[in-house]
Length: 203
Image (tube, rainbow, N blue to C red):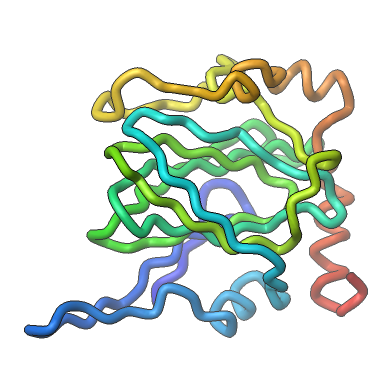
């Protein structure tokens, strides 16, 4: 498995080695040990989610309060999506920066993003099926969103996806500046301290 850090620190693209023969293909899509070596601490898995989306559907930008937050390990098991990670940690040197990875059934890449980072994707095909391994269970009182159409974030959606289709909840989410003013965003210093606590087992 090849792992590279994205433009947003504490997020990674993971590309598996695929082995094919006349029967089909085999690959490892998750390796806890390789991920732990990369991020510096174990990833505790507490929930797994799957979404199935029509072409053009945008889900996100979503994030959770830290601690505990929700680290995510994301794969696409059918179709294709363009997956985004956004640095929304106030005080971060890369605050407002985003990066993206195409997740599909060709390269079968995964994306990992640490707690406190924003996450979104746009479906590039119908029946785009995305599965997430996450580090904490869903808690609606601690979940937040940022409008993915916010010009301050300026996500770039590929033309092949067509017109973006959002849920009313995501459309009504505040922009990045409004969330910052309201004190809704994770703090970079506190999130990095939380990462350190995971490394030394204090979580």
